[in-house]
Image (cartoon, rainbow, N blue to C red):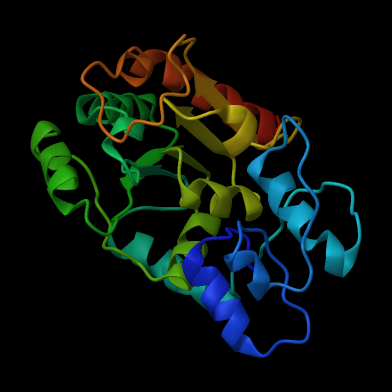
Amino acid sequence: VALFGNPRSAWIAGLSGAAMRVGRGKFPRSLAYNLRPGPGEAGDSALMHHLRTLEPVIGRRPRSLPVLAAPETERRAAKRMLEDRGLGDSCIAILTGATHASKEWPESAFVRLAAQIRMDGRYRPVFLGQPGKRDRLERIRALSNSQVVILPELELKALMGLLASCRALVCCDGGIMHLALALGLPTLALFGPTEPEIWFPYEGANHAELLVQPADCRPCHRHVCDDPFCLEDLDPEQVFRRLLALLERTEGP
């Protein structure tokens, strides 16, 4: 099953020798597939778009939220990692980076959010390492006068164990956001230039919270923006209040 329909996917599908090769794509790469999904519907999220790609194999299915479970060995290792750094089981994970700079909340805003979490006293902020974001995290450390905990980059299973050991995640639009939500972790997503209707298909999920500013220029699809007000105008105090509301809603009395 090729979800993206690009030339490389078509080559892989065509050379695979699989009895069923499912995918979309313009001619001539469409010849690589012998099962071609019909067109999607207006307003489809990315999740529904990909589910429709699978319909020739599995039939039409009602939409449901993805569910993942972290391996118990990875959960235990994550608990030891947090304990070794003087952290308990009340950590708020913070993921600062995104694929493109236009989707990243400012470093100074993350620093202010972490400070508010520390001052509240009930939770401990912990920054997650990310490939290619070391300089960004070091600037956050410097702005915080080294008063932050930054974890190393983790492989996928180890990251799942860590997320499952935290109380919540604050992040920008990206793949780890979807991973956390599939693990059932309360997740506050900060969206800038991307379309929530497509990339945040979690309406009604109790553990999913989206914070997005009105912006006439959304979606701009820019990787770099000279005036990223859609994220810069998100106030850390507002983000903190939404985080507390999310925690109260998911943790109960």
